[in-house]
Length: 255
Image (cartoon, rainbow, N blue to C red):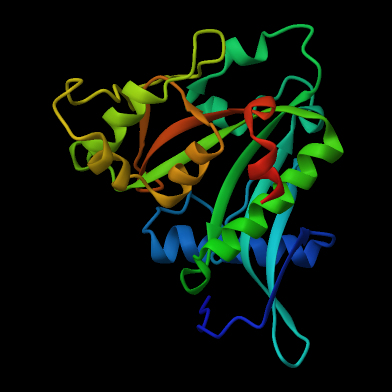
């Protein structure tokens, strides 16, 4: 599907409220993940739609651009999956790549877990204003559903770990989640993230190599799970993000 660039008129954020909204979000995801980023569609996928069983259990956060004639189009999206929306016996999407047992085993905690996923924005809209709108929507969602912890996968483009050795090593050395709240990469595609020795690189230079989404997460106080996953189907290397809501500053939520 072709998305022609236009000048933003008026951006807004809301949850999808119809099947048509969700379909438009799936079309946007296809464009970004498969056409732009080079992901490999799963066998039997409907061309033009990035969709799976999780879509039915999720809320879909949308950023919309309202044109001068009053029409709207979706230019950014996030998939939000609450713990209480998971069917009996079903795990979060992230559990396909990371062992979440430490997080899921926590008992007596007030609030529930929210998984963030399938984040994408059209190239012309990859600005601080769009990201701010997405986070405003997430902040409202957190407050509405008593969320205590957020998690999800964040990606480096490409599947060669050494191309991202600086960023991965920096995350492993400076932002590792503590034991008890630490997802762990599992399976044949799991790799160590601490590819470079501590002290062998300049931290500021490493920080600059991180994808914008990962840097945005870190600004909220996010932590990183142990290891990473080479996802050849999506042409990415994935890390697991953990965010404790109580550690997200009031200033950032307000912003």
